[in-house]
Image (spheres, rainbow, N blue to C red):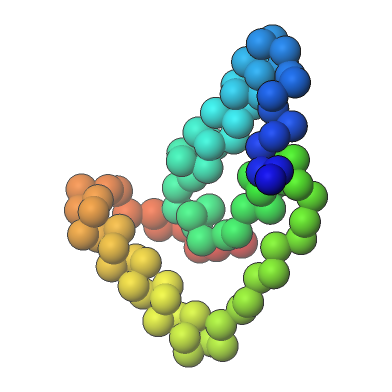
Length: 91
């Protein structure tokens, strides 16, 4: 049975190292997002995967979406209570 990562078995060590570096760079960019950049979905990050599928994104209705945003912000407050507060508005 094939898995999504079977294509890696015939890649060279050099290719694998370059791929790891590319993925690490993308993960760091995502990790280092701050302010309003935390709120957006990240198709560029998903595009680094070899399978080229369009994610089936379900968009919540506005009231549910806003409640989710509030929960997310509350989780940041709990997990990062010393984080500086971003003052600029979203574009």
